[in-house]
Length: 213
Image (cartoon, rainbow, N blue to C red; front, side):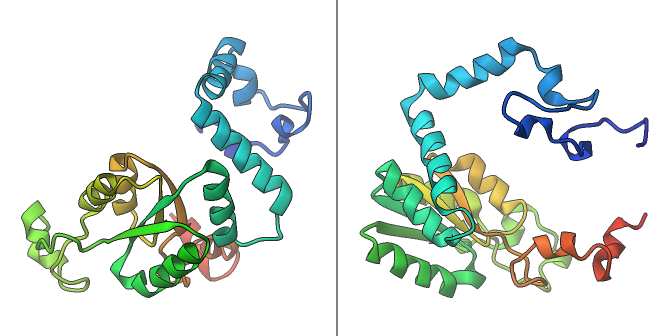
């Protein structure tokens, strides 16, 4: 292991933190390096806030009951119902609007009110925020506006926002400005049919180019 690397969880092959009571830990283990005070203070945040505690419990219950048996769409519905959410927002890429229409139809069948905002909302040219003309040739002149998407869903009073295919960076801006909690249903990857993990699984074949200097 490179001694110049700042080691963290991705460098651990022992996974002692996943063993009840603790297993074997490497010298750089984050769990072992954190003080009990820090760990307990964070744990207390769940216990002090009923919403955070309910989210943590609901997510764990769904994981236990449905792991490897239900889809992420089904898990999202189960989570929203356990949390008592009524109005769900969809922050969608314009290129996945059809998928979002299907999602909205499913959610409405399950009793939710659905309110969606597409990425091109506002109809602003990319040049309005300083995008150079040279970078609007392949993807069109209208900017994605994730901050406005968040603002619209905030104004609508959504209980949970579902992200469908926002671009890298645009999704970050949306998460930062959304007042409601967010969950991602689709992570955009047009090359890999919106399955970005395929690039990781394929690093010993075609995608080994990702590991080259």
